[in-house]
Length: 230
Image 1 (cartoon, rainbow, N blue to C red):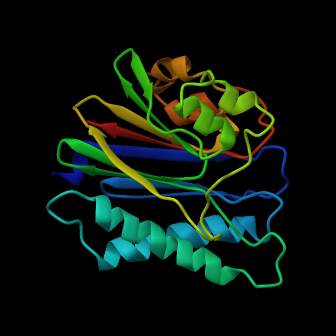
Image 2 (cartoon, one colour):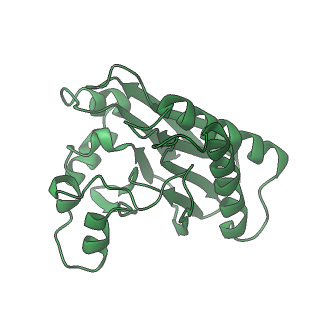
């Protein structure tokens, strides 16, 4: 697998909060976004610390030749331990963050997911959400008890069931087909107002990051990484 076949762009916008609590990283065939939880202690530090721990893990543990499931789980738990160590037992709302990590590996793209940042696959004019929010609203969508958009509008749409920094942490890891011309968008929840069906037009623009962030004023911080299989 040649690293040069994977073109990665990222960017951020500062929304309603006065402090940017999102972070993003990329390196060769991988990219990740993290969204520090607002209202918790040190959300900005939590997101950056998680991605720093992830980068350190990748540097110390080369990609295995086979499936990435166990390797990515180890990386996510390394990030979780780093965020958890940032907090104190006296914190009523300790530092915490979401994490969404994608790694291109041959003809597969592996996704690791904790929280409610979202991965979306664009293949030509077709679009497919790859993750569900780890919220009660997301669980209802997963059980086909509610429509997709209720993850944005339900009263419990932002009540995270799992995040880094707070035990127990639930990690979802899975592969998807990764073909020439595919694009995957990794986005924090500040971009949830963008309809899923709009992503093919956005990623077809010369600068999809700018196109997405120009969609309007965001009530929350917005961060995305666009990963293209060239």
